[in-house]
Image (cartoon, rainbow, N blue to C red):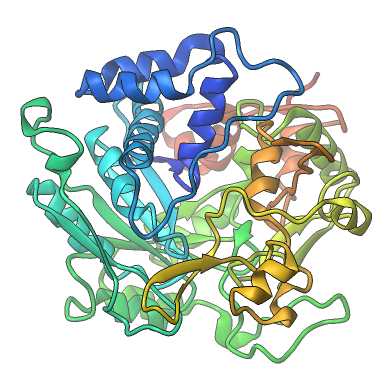
Length: 464
């Protein structure tokens, strides 16, 4: 039996990540190597010169803000997005021949076209997308692969479904003489129900071919789809999922398309079980989020592992924290935005804006608002005050979680940590609260049933 694995880059907000890493001085020189590999050197140098700080910015000094991504992209913003997505995929593919995917959120549409273009220039193998109905993505992949302009209709409150189209001609970013033929990556849609998978598998419903599905359950980390019945909540205010929210693997098999399952599958036996049910494999997130190589801030990682090992880790499915309106699994950690005192002491600000909502103004133009921005600002822009209750700035919080939090006059942005709701794997990988494990340890642990047939020894517990 062959064993295949694919690494997946998080593409959400990656332009901001790269811009801030450049302002930190490109520690380790990895970004420089990737920028040097970009096929249009003049553009790469424009982006580099705009953001790089030799030796890194002075400690305590704020990061230079990047202009918010709007309906009509500024050329310099589009170039940053293209380069950032290229860089992250190129780095992920460096030194091996395995496939690499990139994951985006359908809810964040404004940067979609330059994101995909940058990833495709780097040779990304798969594009994955959820948090919505990503039926427009296949057509974008087809257009860019043919080096033709691609369009993407923006979801705009108060507008018709196809009223506002974003268009990007790859030739306007990278002249054809600098680029080889772009390969069309596979597209995997992330879904939570058989109904959505069946809808997207119908070529009449999409702009092109869907190649597979990630069927994600509500215990997975990050955003999750709300339950079918949105009226039920438990005593902690979490949405209650029922039998109708469980993926029917029999119906997935009947679709005749590859599918992977996600959400509390980080155990060798769960992988075997999924394969026996007809799944092509599993998607794993949390187990790698806590490994040595992950980008999670070291102090947050240590405390999360400690709590998981002592069986005290608490993950809450918060239905309000995300401006997207989707439930978001939040680890309860002191000093993070899960602490009401931390949230209340933070000054509301929207200076990144990825999760803003587009709406049609009285003048017939597109504008944006965010329920996590200052309340008065949101209401003045036509938002409902009740939509601001409990909202948190995930854009800033998640940047702080990877050690790139913004510094304001009132203090540094607090982090917010997300993880899946099952971390039982931790006891098979470490044998004390201070233990650590590598990504390879995690991979060998998960694949031990498959690897036994080729004589690979299962992973042993790691010690400090």
